[in-house]
Length: 590
Ligand SMILES: Nc1ncnc2c1ncn2[C@@H]1O[C@H](COP(=O)(O)OP(=O)(O)OP(=O)(O)O)[C@@H](O)[C@H]1O
Ligand SMILES: [Mg+2]
Image (cartoon, rainbow, N blue to C red; front, side, top):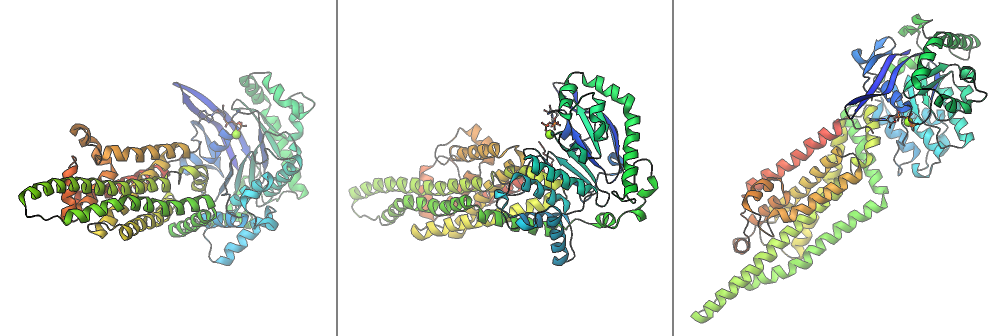
C-alpha cells in the first residue's frame, strides 16, 4: 500500500515558501487505478514527482508497504515506473530497439532468451507487437504513449506513475490508453496513478483525486464526483472548483474524507468478491496481513528479485545505442564527414605558402659582403614570413580542432538531458553513462586529430617531429571536447551549451597570444585556461631548429616547455571530465 501523510512540497520564491503540494493525505491499496485531476498548474506533476522521490517532501511522510521512504530508503529503480509528460524514446530507433535498450539498462537478464521473452511480453501487453520494427519518429501520439509505458513496464514495476499519457489524443486513442492502464493495474497488484486533464472515461478508474492549488479537494469513487461537487456533469467540476478558495475546499474535504474512504473500501471489497481483482492483492487498511511476502503474486515477488545490470553491461548498451543513433542521423554524419574533409584541406591551402618560404630560407649562402648584408636582410624578411606562416598554420590547425571538439560534445548531454534523467531514475549509473560518452567521443577525437595531422603532413610536410605535433593536436581536441562535455552536462539546455562552447572556442585565438601579445598581467591570468595556447606552444617546440627560430623571431609571446604543455592539456581534459561527472551526477529535472 502507498500512504501519503500530510505530504507537502514547497519551493522558495523571493524568500517566501510556496507550497506546490500542500498537506496531501491518502492511501492507495495495491491493484488500484487512480486518476489525479485538476486544472493546469494545480500541482499534479509536482505531486507525482514527490511520490516518485524526485521532489523531496518538505513535510509529511510517504509510506510504501509500511516503509517510510524518507527514512528507510526510496523505491528501488525496478520497483517504480514513471512515464513523464515528454517522450522518453529516441526518434531514430525502432520500437523494438527502444524497448530492448530500456530492458538492457534496467534489468539484469540471465541470457538473451530471457531478455527476448521479457521484450516480447511487454510489446504484447502494450499492443506494440505489430509495429515493433517502426521508427519512433513515425509513431502516432497514442503509439508513442504506449511505447513510453512499454519502456517502464520492462522492470515489472509495482507502482506506475503516468503523467498526462492521454493528453493530445483523439477520444478513441485516449480510451484505449486508459483501458490499457486499467488492465495494467489489475495485474500483480500494481498501483497505477495517472495524471490527466481529461474528465472523460473516469468510470474506468477506481478513484479520482481532485487537486486544487496543491491541496486535495476530493478523493473518492468516480461515481461520487458530480455529487460531491453538486454539478450535473464532470465537465462542470473545474469551473466549480474555481468558485471557492482552495483552503475552503481542503477543509470541507477534511469533514467528508472518512465517509468517501469507506465507499472506496466497499467498492474494493466488491471487486475482490466478483473476482475482478485478485484476492491476494491486499486492500488498504482492511487486509494488512496480505502484505506478507509469501502471499504476494508470483511476478510481484519476481519483480523484487530483479536486479540492475552491471556497469559494463549498461556501458555497452549505451555505447551501441549511441553509435546506432549517430549512424542514422544523416545530418550529423554528413557534418562530421564535411568537417573531417574540409578542415584539413583548408589548412593545406594555407600551408603551401609556408613550405615554399622554408626552402628559400634554407638555401641562402653568399660571399660578397654587400650581397651578404642584402641577403641577411632578405633572410630576416623570409624568416619573418616563414615564422608567421608556420605559427599561423599551427594555430589554424589548433583552432579548427578546438572547433571540432566543441562541435563534438556541446550538445551531447544537454540535448538528451530529460531522457538521461529519466533513465537515471530507472537505475542507469551516471558512471556508465559518462563512460559511454567518453568512449564515443574518443573515437571522434582520435579520427579527427590523426586525420588532420596525416593529411596536412602529406600535402604540406610539418617541419618538425610529426608524432609530437599530432599528439598536441589530439590533446587540444580532447581538451576542448572534454570541457564542452562538461558545459553540456552543466547547462540546462542544448542551446545554452552550444552558445557557451562556441564563445569558448572564439576566445581561444585572441587569448592564446599567438597573434597578438596580451598585457602581461592579463596573460598570466588567462593563459592557464587557454587550451589553444598550450597546443600551439607544444607544437612550435616540436619544430626543426631553423623553423623554430623563425617562429620565435616573430612572436612576442613566450613559449612553454613541451612538458608544461602536456601537463596543462592533460589538466584541461581531467578538469572537463570531473566537471562533466559532477554535472551528469546531479539531478536536473525541469
Ligand atoms: N521547481 C519549481 N519551482 C517553482 N515553481 C514551480 C516548480 N515546479 C512547478 N512549479 C509551479 O507549480 C505549479 C504546479 O506545477 P505542476 O507542474 O505540478 O502543475 P500541473 O498540475 O502538473 O500542471 P499541468 O496540468 O499544466 O501539467 C505551477 O504553477 C508551476 O509553475
Ligand atoms: Mg503537469
